[in-house]
Image (cartoon, rainbow, N blue to C red; front, side):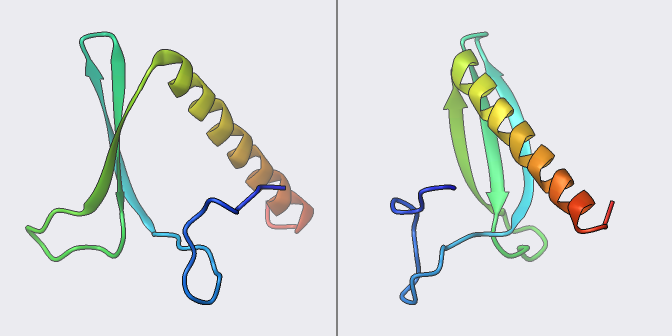
Length: 85
């Protein structure tokens, strides 16, 4: 079970989560990879989306990739158990 003690919460104690809108990746001199995650409510045309831009080492990127693949596998397994697959 995840430990949510360090996560941002609202006044009612619920986790603050933003809808995912999109992403982009970049390479920086073959030393780091960048990831831009666009989040929040869809913006008006011509307005940039709110985003966080993060640089990763190869090791950190592989750890993130493994964690995301594991999360996707658990979502798929949950759908199968619920009869939605």
